[in-house]
Figure (cartoon, rainbow over the protein chains, first blue to last red):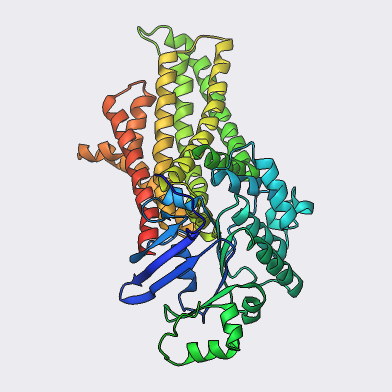
Length: 254
Length: 248
């Protein structure tokens, strides 16, 4: 199918995405417009539906209704085409402990259809970015948690995807590593569209251009960070207000 | 895309000592059986010459080796297949394959092909062992081919069944136990069917079909049964993986 490349087309367009498990509404009418250069922080209490949403955005879970379009390609109708443009870092890093870092990243690139001619350059670049140069020949199983997380991150970006989806990329890292991952996200955000979930509100304020808050499977806030700052809203108090009581959905101020 | 998955599976398989130990042990046991049968053959050789249509070395030595190899394949299948899907699920790596622009069919076929490459490697070792007889005689290549075909089909049946059971569990040990159980049941079915009149039960036993090939009988029914068995379980595996995407 033909994809018309226009700068106006969002990298990821999600419309009224819902997912039911039996009678339970895990995600209800989630919508999103993400352009290249946007960094979206997805916030919400545990069990709010963040991971379920991300699994749907990456084709790991079929939505009950609604649509996901990646660079204009429908994810449900043309999954193989659409998945080319996505890089996904799941909550649990998908690592093969028996492979070396180089072997693993090469496999990740090939899996995303990268041809062997472009591979060495891409491997060098991604190792540079994620500071993995020193451990290329080592087995993933013997690396520390921080390195493993970086390898998993490298796996998500080696094929230069348009959209990068990250589920709690800084969970379980030490403060220095968190700083490093944040800097990396900021840098990647210049040329990619990024959506990531987190529990650290300060992280969103430090890195993101947009913020969404989910509660009980529904979006309760969808706003640009600049707009929030102008209204001198404090993210922490806002998060508390929106996810403790049952206030109606706030108008989008993007 | 399938080759990428095959390469990865083989790399991981041969990175562990498991594959090497199995190949070594299998070769040890088969060489022992081989020498035992060779010894028997040499002892009865003079009596055999008095028969009108005496069995040759292929029939006396090679066929039993293939028969024992089928049991060795049965033993290793659960351990190999549990890694394929159940362990990937447990290690959260299956997500990486599903998120990639690769169809579920390609994932399943890649894993199946990797298992087959391993089995064919084991088969190659058996062939080398058998062809050592060429030093002192000639082999019945028709019977040898029939055995090779039979063992390949049996391995394909094992691999597809193992993959399906692996797709059902997220605990590798459970996957291994269940495929061991089912394979032993199929084996027992063959033994039980010998004295029970129920002839139809024998048709269901993949070992019964292997025995035909083992005797040098290439039966189109056995051939069709094995191929259908493989296709059915591969299709079920793909369905199961797709079900997870649909039902969570």
